[in-house]
Length: 283
Ligand SMILES: [Zn+2]
Image (tube, rainbow, N blue to C red; front, side, top):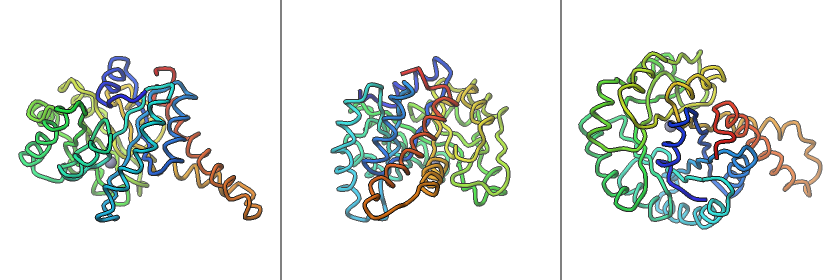
């Protein structure tokens, strides 16, 4: 069943759990994520991307992906939301909506506060007009490879979050509380005190970017401290590659078996996170 991420996260907030949001990019990754949800009886969030590097072909790629993603989501036994991860512009958000996404993230977290509000509000108005939910980011989640600096810089301020949510009307808010994208150089430190303050300040679901490498104890605690969605990529593809390395590659006719083995690893890591974050048995 295909639903919006907004309504899915309201349920997660009510029951105090988080849903893993794997990055997906093709039929295999989408199928693996949906199967993970069905096997764990968990709601599923598919985080797709606008592939800027593909230039003029990017919208077409998005439309093609949705030709199989939407029927797969509709046929699923569990609720599925399709969300644009890190949409950069109004145009990208509109292309995603036209393609059939049920939710879009518009990321203006590198802009000054007023500009962030203005650009996000524009997307919220358009998306809500057609029943699509919106995620946005306040503060800025940086890169794990620059963690010594990014881990402490631009953390979300609770008092700003109150105004931001009120001014923009977003459905869920990505917060910077010490996580980072990609692998960490250094040990992740999560500012749980700040997270609790934000949770008490705003009444919408919160999102954690950079879940990979953050650690099971931290993620499990975050899922009980107001985080309702955790974005994951690196840990999932690492698990897939590890399975592939263990696999006896055999001859060329084992090609499709090898692909399957890799995606089994990716899928089992999603299932692990569904259990860890508490979304299992909550579909
Ligand atoms: Zn992110």
